[in-house]
Amino acid sequence: MKRLWIASSLLFALLLQPMAGAAAPLDDAIALYNQKQYREALPTIRSEAEKGDPTAQWYLAQMYYYGHEVEQDYAECAQWSLKAAKQGNDMAQNGFGFLLEEGQGVPQDYRAAFKWYAMAAEKGHPTAQENLATLYMKGLGVEKDYGQALHWYAEAARRGSRFSRYQLGRMFFYGYGVEKNEAKGAEYYEIAAQDGQVDAQRELARYLTGLKDQPGKQAEGVAWYIKAAKQGDGESLSTLGCYYSDLGDFKTALTLHRRAAEMEIALSQQEYGKMLCAGKGTDVDYEKGFIWLSKAAYQHQPQSQYLLGMLYELGKGVAPDVQMAYAWYSVADLYGYPPAAEHKAAVLRRLTAAQIKEGDAQAETIMSSY
Image (cartoon, rainbow, N blue to C red; front, top):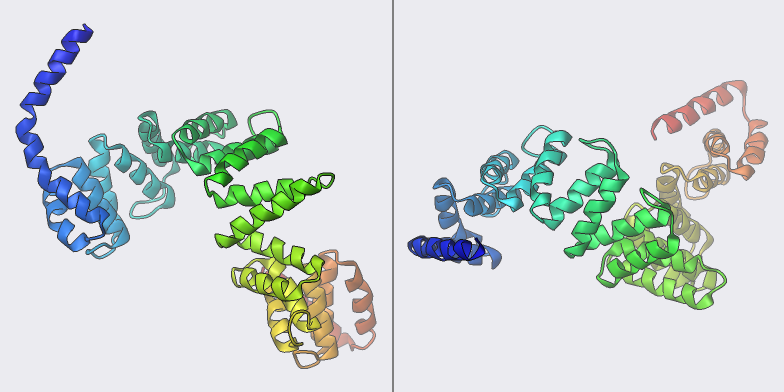
């Protein structure tokens, strides 16, 4: 039977030889696409897509998704992706699943996304396996099932998915669908981290620096934080900012916190604001410090809320306003920052009943803006 299948396959290949020649223009167009020569690639890709070639349809879908020599149009992308997906193209099946998951060009539909991811995953498409695992992990479009998530992340990881290796690390580290094993989780983190996966680098760094009884591991952890920071990871930049601040290297800490603050990392917005107000690593600048502490305060940082109260009370970086100081102290007190209660009580004695009522209203307004 096996020999008959081989013979039949050879005959089939011979019968397809003329078709192989006809496919050459599409091969050339795909080569042009991969070289980012989209204008030259488009006519052939479109022509072959309209003739029903699924590979061409998938490439045309991508051109609509990214706006390569066509106006970006998610609906057109979805139409061409679906045409290719229905013909069994695993890349298109995964791609159409993604559009359904994100609601781009089609109504968001997690169940349908799950169906298309599953089709591509069964064929061995690693990104589809990764996406399918994530739906199982989150319980989107399917009942949450950590065991299935673990299975599909493992399949994708075996095919080289860095993100899946990182996710396997998380599952072992926190005990999702498997017995908790931080050391084993760290092993997966390291595999992904060595391959440049930034989340894995950060989480491996966090694990290693937490091994307080092993100084060598802590130094190794800092090195991983540096690798992640070089890839632009905001949390790692922030952590390194705190690390260098503890070492007394305030200029380096200031630079790191500024970069992380600009990436909306709340802790660094707070620390950068504090350093500006204290003149650590830079000249004192209350006005700029007030701006950054405000950003952090609206990201639920109670210390920043308390410090804003102080700045309003003292008139540093902003016009003095005891009523606003009371409002911010009230918010910080509500979030459980211990010094805020004492300062709130102190300024309360300086306010009229009307001002207290207005200050309470301002605190409520601040809270409702979160």
